[in-house]
Length: 211
Image (cartoon, rainbow, N blue to C red; front, side, top):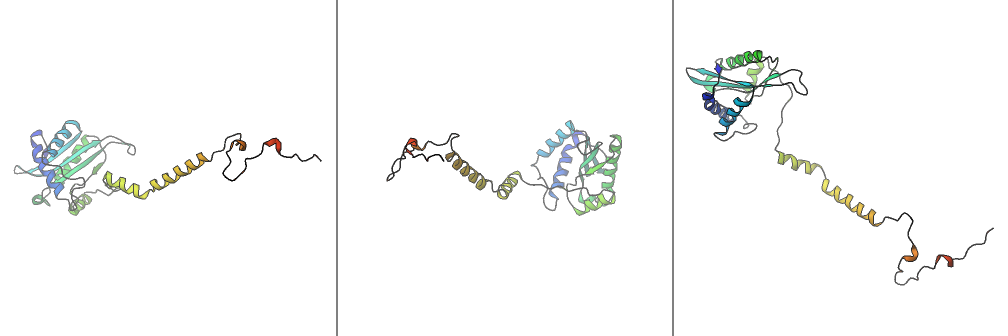
């Protein structure tokens, strides 16, 4: 097991494509087109603090592990090492390749002064889950994914925004039309409707005698 160099990245890219295609329900976030993974790996090695471990048997790539050091965040007191990829080719499984890769990552974690290792299994296979459990990894929380467009549609279905907004607009319009001026309405200025006599002036009404 050794650290990957720039010349190893094409081999690592092909291994990652195999790992994504092996997922029982399809890769969680999709498998990029050929060539895209290589460019992403090049950007990762140039800008991220982490390690790409390669396991070779007789000069043949048997597996790979890719990790990244994360700084303390909102709910973490210290930095941690996140193993984002742990992949062993099928013909080399159950032969100690995965354990050797994790030993290399554990040594890197100690050298990076990180006390915790978090894994994000790519393949989603049960064998990978069992392997991590035997090494002492436990499940913490869960991740869920959703397309943004699908989320917008579901939110619109769950929230009757259109009908409510139209009802509020109609009520506001009715209130504006029925609004009474602060000093009242001068009834003498109101035009009489057909068939009705105009209202008499205010001084023409009889005044009741004072008692």
